[in-house]
Length: 78
Image (tube, rainbow, N blue to C red; front, side):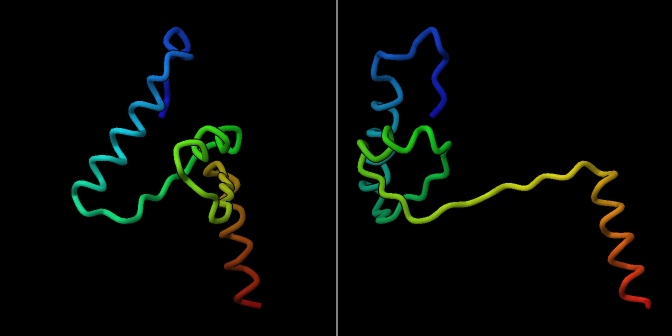
């Protein structure tokens, strides 16, 4: 949950998460998955979430990706 810095510290994000979880429970949803910044782990743990692993994002710009694909194509044809 992103909160505009001008409104932080008022419990707004906590209330949004609590409402979302209550709505999910009422709809019969038994599992909610969350991806967040590592710095927010304590906030979400306080809302009842538990860490189940980690995920990493590796992003390439188009030029780097094209070079990598070209190199793969060349090595497959040797």
